[in-house]
Length: 494
Image 1 (spheres, one colour):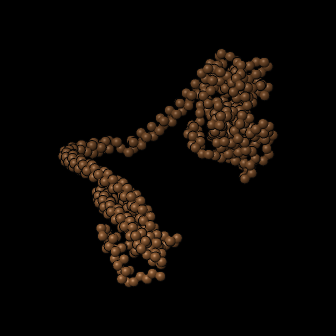
Image 2 (cartoon, helix red, strand yellow; image 1 turned 45 degrees about the vertical axis):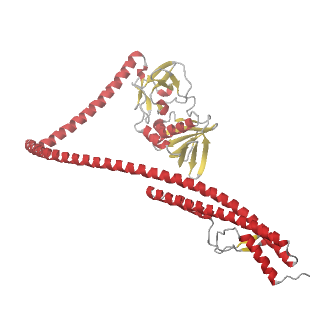
Image 3 (cartoon, rainbow, N blue to C red; image 1 turned 180 degrees about the vertical axis):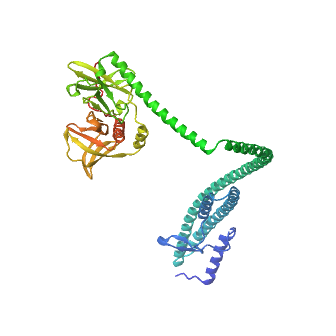
């Protein structure tokens, strides 16, 4: 067995250390501390766990700059970018020093491995095993050092990119500061000029006010004197007499206007009577939407209307085209919205003798109805209170209040919470004013919800009835449906 003395061991250690450290310059005064981790990997022990890596420092600084960018002024932003640029330069310098230190570590590890290889040939037994374990540890350190070197190269590239970005941002910030400074100077100069102009205008206005004040005061004194003179001339009793006289003149003018309209109507009837034999009957009533027209005898010798057959027509005022109003065969007819702007004609047939009666002019629209309907169109669903008088032509004995809902897509008839009819707009649906029925015809409408189901509804007023018809036709037209009465668009031959 070979025995190694202490003298030989010390001599060998001195030779190995001398060969390794002769021409190596260490970056620090101590050798890094290592320990064996899992799977026999060499792990460098960190003295301070709170110390961040260079990559984490760069990321944190960049995040702080981006976060503060929104609330910093232009000048502060430029200052921050300059500080960031200086920090990036410092980080670049640190990366360069770390690269140099890494290179020195590579040289150190190589020489250390060579020394251990040389030492492995000189020793045997347990010392040789220790040397081989040391060589394995050095090789593991070399691998980790290579990986660390790759990370340092990547960090160096990121630091360089960040430095370029900060440099460009710093230049942009300086340029922006210069532009803002120039703009602020221009604004200040414009403000000074504006203030000067305002001061000059105020001074001019003050001078003109002083000159005009004296003139206005003199004119006011003259007007006061003239008012006093007029007041002395006109006593209160005379003023009251003049007001009463004006009121009487207005009343006389209104009566003359009514009498003139009546004379014009009688003149039109007289002219028609001279041309044919229609003087046996006449159309009475206001020729406007919301009223009703009534055929009545014009003389005592006129035959009874119950022995005559009647048919109403609507005639276009410009083209003269005549359209039969289906179902309008009574002596009373209430105009509906389709009749506005058209002349109404009634044919009275007695013993094969036809008597034609017409209105004096086109049917006028109801005042304010158009704006009322336009206001209702904005709603999705409009509710009207109605009374159900007939169902499929049969009188309804109950006179309870129902509600008619006219919506953008359908019409619904309800009684309380119960739905009686609910139909969407379709080609089979019909809606028009009631054609006949006495004085209440102007407040009633005919609604055919679908085939073999029809209703006659009475509204609270003529305005609600006409508004419901116009509103339903408006919504149906938006659904590409023409909503009208029976045979409303069927022309009749003259």
